[in-house]
Length: 148
Image 1 (cartoon, rainbow, N blue to C red):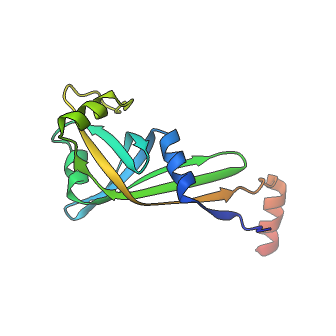
Image 2 (tube, one colour):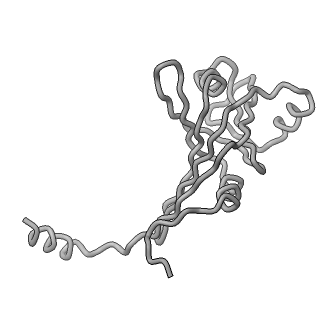
Image 3 (cartoon, rainbow, N blue to C red):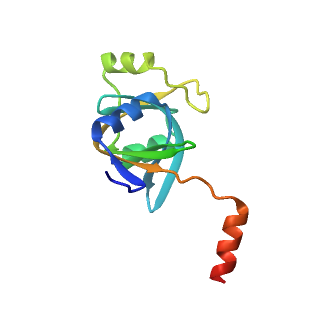
C-alpha cells in the first residue's frame, strides 16, 4: 500500500473531472506577458469549449498561444488539481457553431455577441492530495518552541 499523500490521477479520471465541473482558470501568453483568467467552460471527451466576447483579451490570447486550463477542489480529506493543455481555435462551421450555442456555458460577464473557442486537449494530468488532519494549535506551538 502506498502511504504517499500525493497520487497521480489517471487520464480517464482527469477527463471525467473536467466534464463534471464548469469553472476553471485559463493561463496563456499574450505577447510577452503571461495571463491567467477565470472562465466558465464545457468539457466533453477530449475537447473544451469556452465562450467569450469578440475582441477581448481572452479571445486574442487564446488564439495566439498554447494554453492551460486548470480546475481544482479542496475538500476536508483530500484536494485535487487537473490541468489540460491544448491550443484554441475559433468555432466557425455552422453545425459546430450551433452545437456550441446549445452548450450550458455561462460566462462571468454577459455579452450581446459571443464567439466560441474550442480547445482540443493535447495532454491532461492531475494530482490528488490526501490532507492530513490539522493539529491543535497547542501542539503546533509547542513543536515550534522546541525547534527554536
